[in-house]
Length: 461
Image (cartoon, rainbow, N blue to C red; front, side):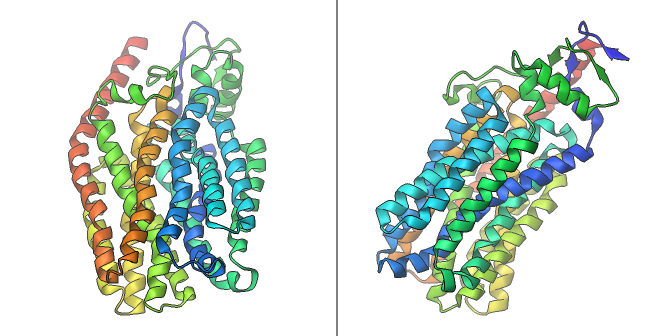
């Protein structure tokens, strides 16, 4: 039966009715590979740092801390910018541009010979890298059936954890022969190839196309691919039950209306706290482990255990989040505090204990971040989803910038390793408090959105 132009098509309803399909699984797998290089880049500089410091004869760890934070500073600037671009001109173009940018500047990092050069190139790498996350979150979330949205986003984001595990083996196996430059050659060339693949295979968001004037033909063509069981005419019109108000500026003012006045600030606190603690760990753990005379090969294994733990934790968290919202994250956040503190007290006693606590810390910490990314895609409407995710990541990057810098200052104070990890647990304690405050507010918003969907469906029937 043909769909009449007089009866607008509810895109959200079509996606929910369809459930998970081969297209959804393919999209998650493809974007998993895209974000893998975000995780790779975040940890690559940490593993390059010891070799870079030796090559530059650098003894000022605080200066290296600033280099470690440079890419995060670029992300702080780039996240809302590329989120805005994604909401205005499309997720697909923003993602491709971002990947090409950070791949090119990562590759150029092999030419750096001074700390200022490293800082500038790492900043520019981060600027491009920032555009990937908010737009991939929006893209995957806007194709996801409502009941599987958190799961799709979390599984996709587990690619970050897998990517974060690769620099360790490369550093242990190839850096001694090819130098630290090999880390950035790999981190530059492959993303450029991925961007070329995106030009051919990455789709535009169906919800983005549906709310954009002049792009209806593209939306109809994509809907015919997504729902071959339905017939759509060329003059089909669309409605989206969470369309919301279109953001016209980079200002975050749209993120504080319609029940978001308290939710958005609490979400930002969570992003800041979690990313501050996370970036302290991934940036300085290789250096801290080398300070207790652990070989680079063992430090690489410890990092991989952290990242693999994060991926598994994300998978464990995914479906419970679809069903229970933030409730599972409360448990994960409490254990994150204990896990980080235990790295310093238990991990320094034996290698098996170190590997266990690194795995457990990654299981809790990375899964929390994946969950936060999913929440940012759920609470904001289509028209401001990439802006909302972009601003959350932008504010979170403030914590990411300070994580490596504060870590460098604390390490320069020659504090004992167990005490350093105890201090690194403090941001996760703050995040725990914020999760408990946010949970009832988020549940109320989700109930309100469900009631609006029901009322909207009844009005159209």
